[in-house]
Length: 134
Image (cartoon, rainbow, N blue to C red; front, side, top):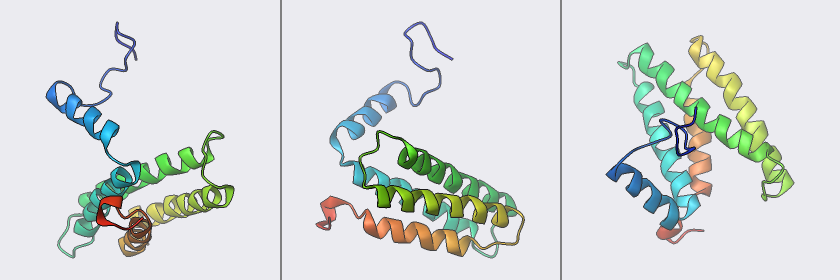
């Protein structure tokens, strides 16, 4: 849905928060942003994996992780993506695995530990440039 300015409604933060988000997008290294998103999603998975965590937390964290991987998979499948074909194919394959494993987690037949391990591996590859690791 578009408003009169042709911008999507509810597209993100408004007011000062939207200015902050724009500054971050314009100044931060994309790998740093991706690492931070993986960090947040993985922390939610870890919290949901605790023995006393409610099942609803498990579902919410797994769903959020699936949304992240859906975005990554769609981006990798985009013809305009400039990553090497082999890397794009690997991201798509991992995304498909994440979707299947998430279904298992939601049916209580899978473990959040495997999803956490995959995310941690990706995070190591995305380590923020500011940490001196490229």
